[in-house]
Length: 578
Ligand code: XMP
Image (tube, helix red, strand yellow):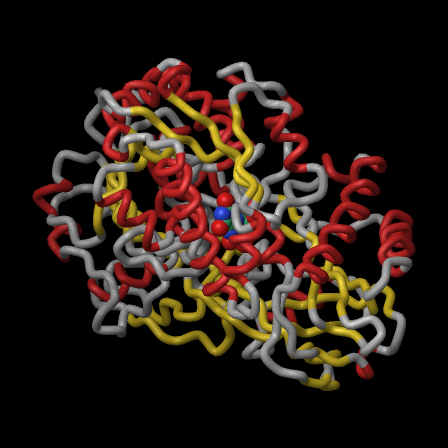
């Protein structure tokens, strides 16, 4: 049994809401997430309340609300991002649309530490921001505790009432001292006592699997990646190997060598589904359509196998290695925006979930926690250290376009008429890309914050023809383009491994964009990022010599006109382009 939560996190739809709860648990204090409008009476037994960020504006009538009585029950409250704005709004301050958005790293200037939340934290520090609205004036009884260049109220406090707000995200790793804010809030402001040991989770997970599966058997989709391997192993331990069957689906969208890698695992069957996947995707250009088609195709594969092998339906349920970001970015909590529909959250899968026919042991875990669980289970490092690879595979790294369009010169660089997905202020964006002429990361962040209508900046590293002479062209997912991307990905991966660069980054997508000239119609974008959990990410530079080698290898391949590097952090650009 889990203890009663000492900290309750109110879910205002933020990307990071469950991350906040987990960070508090990592401090040794049990925390749970509740809907934002939970009543004050339901929260009275907790020692403290945190209100999460969210994609809405407090002036939007449909935006998440909190019960105003929570500020009267004598429990400390910390509002993060939208959480700070709703506190200001409810208690008589003013929230205004910022002139500029603020996405990514910022420098917080904190006033002299005057009370418990900020103890030990005065001065300048790096924080992570993702917002446009901001608090313009604090409510009566509050004082401004910190500011950044574009945000006059980056932190506010009413210490006598134990109510605080921060516009930045202390829960993400890029806020360098974020953990200290949460630690101060939990132990100093709320006086919580340690009651949670993160290592107790494996027996807890096995118990949950047994409860969910009951007497049935599990048909488990594995991909050869970390999440599905850990989830599969947990199921096999909880239920016994005889009751769990692992199936690897070859979708035709995998990286080079993946199917062979999966073949090495004992007890896994390989299902060749290349034809149906590629047929279903023929002619499709829209990213969300691709994701839906792929997810539904996985459901069909499962149905086909069950029918072919005459496995009585009701005795089998589906197992998946879904992790928390897969559910949250698909709009998994009441107030969250859909950033991307992950392949394991399409309608067909949701239906199975509603009927209780899915087991997903890791669905509230983040990547770094999954790796820890994997280590505790004794899985090999070779497997656990693999870079994440998305279920929809190369399909969402092979960008398509409905129109031919020229590159447009602008004062800052060139507008590339290829759209990609981003996440700005907790909402989805789908916007064109700006290319500049050198990998200047600081300038890229400044440009994204300044120029409305873009969510990503790339640098041209080497091109066969001048960038302004390049054309984007109408094209869809074809076997030829997927093969081109697979070759490019394999070449980059080999160099990245050989140089040891792959160990310096958390993930390294290679993206094919329809930008070039008739004889070489596509270009490659390199997207190496560092992250802890995939929810936020920092774009990582590539050492010049290695980058040169990558360009040599790529431009020797047929069909490729240029090599670019993505300079965008997450937010505002997501890790994958679609
Ligand atoms: P984004 O692009 O949203 O990606 O910044 C965050 C992490 O999630 C992975 N990803 C997926 N994984 N199914 C998956 O199993 C999916 O549909 C999916 N989409 C994105 C992505 O590779 C990154 O690690």
